Image (spheres, helix red, strand yellow):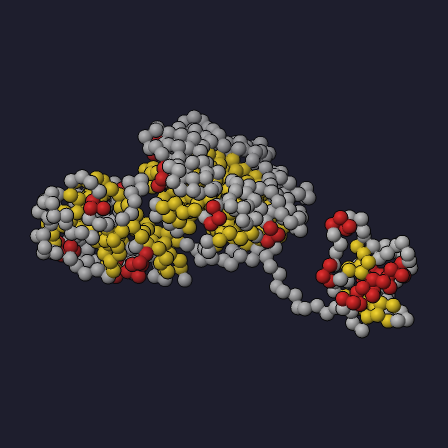
Length: 638
């Protein structure tokens, strides 16, 4: 007879008799396999396998006391020998889900603040001095390669590492250190490591802590608490550019307070921190987040944010921000500790965001990984415990309910997520010995997103004025002016503008995912808001050129491949941003037609019939580089 619920209770009676009165052992059914916590503290659990005779009967000669757990066992009742146990056949094991994995030597001895991936190697920075098992001395920075911890030259560094960035085979390191750990090299808070040796940067480094690094081409941008180079030779004010040989300050003498985060997208540098304006006070309402492009600072929409930004991550033209903020600077947007900014518009995350500080963000395709000091979503509906994934508009906890303490750094390498912070184990306490750094395998590698920014060519762009009010044909034109015109003149003739971008450098196999046009307002003739008066922008997109490469009168009416609009974008930092993704099939990736993609801008309403000139002036391709029209193309490579 095979055991069922009845046989379990019969077995319980038999075992009780075997143990003797006053010393009961209880059989436990599969539906109630363990006693309540209060009972469990007083009762020892017994594994039947430890008391099993070769014939399946129980050996009770040692007079065991406690509770039998019969999960996974079949029980047959023999009237002579008593209960006979056999292991129950198991179903095929399901594939193991992603689990947190300790790194070698049980991790590190203290907190991790920074992570950076270089090929298959992971660079780790923080306050640790050795591995957790004391087996490898590291001193605040280390390389983790092929499952082995490797110290860097000169025994590492003498102070905490706060930031890491990879540029080719070089790793830039920032923090609070002043020398190598062996005292032989003075570095002063910023250094370059080429894989085998340290190099000091010019002017003896910097005069205070470095908190953020970002690489853009051959330039390295540096942010932090510093105000000058260490030799007091160059005033920098919390942010600087290093071009491989020399330091230079950014426009407006830098910023008025600390920088904590940097991110690069195309030709744009995004900066987050504690600042509210430029150091010279001329660009205001930056409020903890700013954009630096073409040598100029610009504010974000809605006057930025109301609190510090500690983390930035760019994915195409989307920027993800984390920190202590709870709303936009003007109070109109609720953005609790995390937000997305795209095309001049703020977007909140689901569930109202998060309940506490965000310190780190990493992108894997369409997935956003977030680390910090939070434990739940802002509405309390989802438990996340210091690290989480956001995908498809929803939050999800990572395995083992997350981690048991703060996360300061995240990095994605292929299908692995690396996490650094002050945790030592998972939130459910199931995985121990993580000790400040851990790996979560099993991510689905996302496509690599690329961003290319093109500026309109002054020799080929300009404005064209209609030959007469109703002709719908071009008349006079101007291709040399630094401004374009959209609207009408006193004779009710329409102005249109043609922009010209050489997009041939896009890969032939580029899969274009988003197209954005940005044009900067120079002023208005005739007053009012022409965008509203003339009912919004229309953009005619041409794969190739409307006529000849140079501007012609006929470009006014030449056929386009696709028209997008009307659009009425808000003016943000002096720029209008138009989403042209609907015309992405007509962005020229080839050298044919001069490699050009041309865009004709016009208003939906051709004229306002008031016999007064009223037009919007936009900077053209003949304007200074920072103000020229931009075509931003985001793409993956198949």
